[in-house]
Image (cartoon, rainbow, N blue to C red; front, top):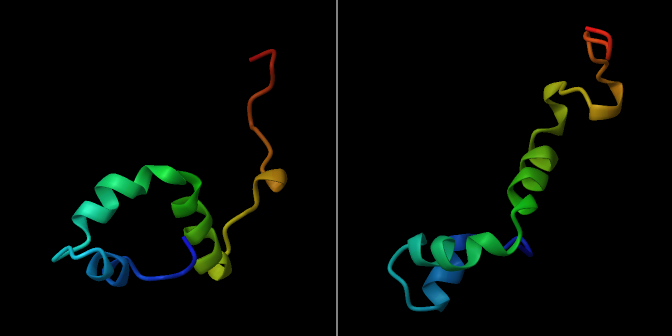
Length: 60
């Protein structure tokens, strides 16, 4: 979560690949994936949530 690639973490823990790291530590910060995607792809023209307006009203 501090920007270290999973392959490096797995190697330091003695694992041959990243599966064990993902399986055992991936649940610690579920929002980390979403935050990382938002940071990496912020220039794709995605609309921020406050700018989104629902097409349906409560009366629909």
